[in-house]
Length: 150
Image (tube, rainbow, N blue to C red; front, side, top):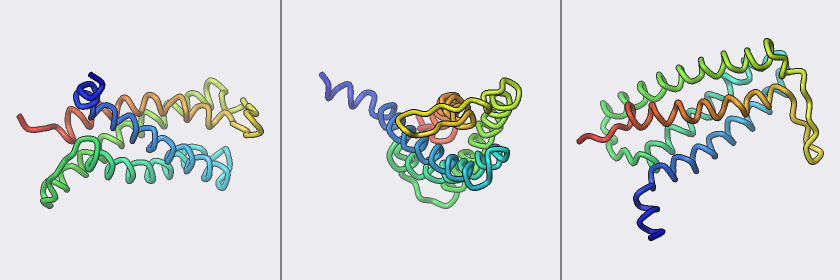
């Protein structure tokens, strides 16, 4: 029974696992660049973290989530263009959401100490937007980029 469920939902399960890992890559790199560049440049820190996360996500989605087996140059180019285009759209959504949360709704002024780890408002906004981005990216990857041929 469990084996059947794992087989049936393998793609979704692997997407969640690699989605969590991609989110970790995004959050850690965001935190690093938010610290280096300063909290006022959070949108730039987000773009830099996006580059790291998208690079990681493309490889993991291609190989393990959607199991795209072709290494033909025309297939790779099509996938990469589609992947980056979809991710650019979700980056735009994320940047807009971050700006709204940090600058308009003033989440940027919040600071929380959790187990001796300071989480600033920028990171809270980033966490909120990660959920939105994960859903958008799954839909684009599943229905457009790595769509299986019938």
